[in-house]
Image 1 (cartoon, rainbow, N blue to C red):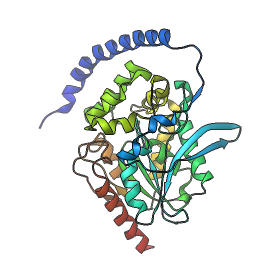
Image 2 (image 1 turned 60 degrees about the horizontal axis):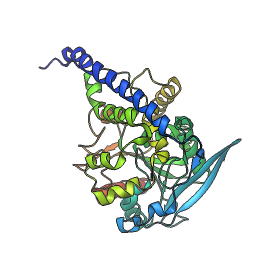
Image 3 (image 1 turned 180 degrees about the vertical axis):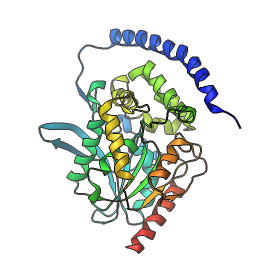
Image 4 (image 1 turned 90 degrees about the vertical axis):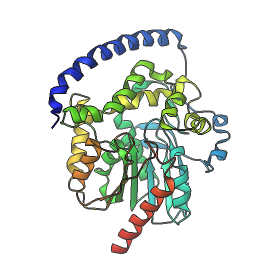
Length: 353
């Protein structure tokens, strides 16, 4: 049997010059970007509507909805969301996107689920999609995203929610579940993580490869991240890539994209506040006794290995249906299959009630 532990030290030794080189490049790039950046620009940006022209041809045909949320003395920028299906339906499906996507990712699932009588809602987090965007990276925090989601659910007076999470929407959405468990009826978990695993063995390091690669690119590029080029690696064709990149007409609009990976503590020595929130989320979910559906793509980021194993251990009674192929953004290619599995799951548990 292969002894994986013997490879940990060589792997770390090989990674050190790469990380050092990236750090040097990053600081040089940051100096250049700061020198080129205009000194005066608004703290909150709104993507021009013309940037979204032509998305109906790609299947994004929904009427926009906008709200401005307030939490105490904090007034948040304008938030956009899609709200399709019967408005008074007690069957609510709330779709949570991740990085660097927005509600556009779920467009095919929204149509399929809404056509079957479900009320389907997909919000764009601040910094993404048609929602407003802070121009400063420092404004984006884990607390901002969780607060936005809590206030959004409260504002729309949602209940009996089936929460669907994907990518970095997992740490945010699942964190909020522990704060409002009475409003959540069931969970559907797509490829995602609950970070800051205490396991730092080789299996975990290998599982983090895609995350580390993505983070390294953002570490160097910051808001000058070439999103269209990177989405090509997810097998997204050039026309569809335009839909994903529409919210970001230039680098000023990409602060949220550049910041979110820095908020995900994949190792135990990250931000203590976020780490503790992730740990408390795991403790809460271990006691979760409502229905759970796992729909992980077997060839997507975090679709197998340590990440999926964690969710199977958190929800030993959950239903696990592996999705064959589709990559990480498999809502793009497997929307009918995902929608069918989700509707069957909901019908099954509705009958039990």
